[in-house]
Amino acid sequence: MSQSAVPVQRRGGSSETPRFGDATEWEAREAQRQRELDEARARAAQMEKTMKWWSDCTANWREKWSKVRTERNKAREESKQLRANLDISMKEANSYKREKNDLEVQISQLKKEMEKVHTLMMKHADQFHKTGMCDASEDTEANGRDTNCSPDISSDGLKNVNSEDGLVTKTICNDMKDLDIEEFVLKGAVTKNVNEMDEVSAEEKRLIQQLSKDDFDEEYLLQKISMLQLRLDEAQKTVQAEREEKNILHKTIEKLTLEIQEVRDRQEELRLAKQVSNTLRYNKLVTNFA
Image (cartoon, rainbow, N blue to C red; front, top):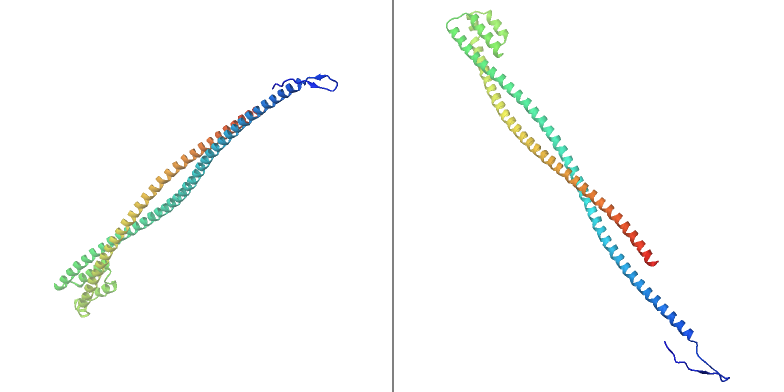
């Protein structure tokens, strides 16, 4: 800034020029202040850019951490759900195992009952066969009486019937030994023989009914055994399916555990990277302000 030198008239008649040093010093100070102002503006703009970058970086990190946290919570919930499903599957498998053991016990009991039924059927068949033999011996005895056989033969036939069927007592046979043919007829041996035949017929009918009932019971037991066998097969299939599902759940849990471990490792890496980045930014900011 230049100014024209104007002489100044003083009272004594002498003139004096202005001091140019003050103006030059003022211009230098003004220029220095302008430079400082420009530097402050530049630093403020740089600081604004740095703060904006820091805000954007923080927002990005916050978004990433939110996603990681969401994935971690989701993995935890899935792990809890799978663990609950595993517990339920274990309980169901134990219940199926108990049912299987109960069915095996019932099957063993039914097999024992079937063996008893078969033994009883064989016993009744033998008795039925012996009853037929007794009828044949009684027919032979009747023929012997018609041909005037000795009373000892008829008494032996009665003993045979008594020993095989248990329908005639030994007291009657012993009494009949001491009697002759006339006394045997007079005492109504024929009537007794007819009564014995009626008893034998009644016994045969009872045996036939018992055998038919045993056959019906056998069929019922066979049906029950088949039904229990079907239930056992279904229980075994269900246990096998539950075992396979349990293995799948174990594999899924292992996979989720590995994923959780990877997320944790990634989280640790991000934390370390964040610490390093914060340290570098802090050092840079300190250097800029210095």
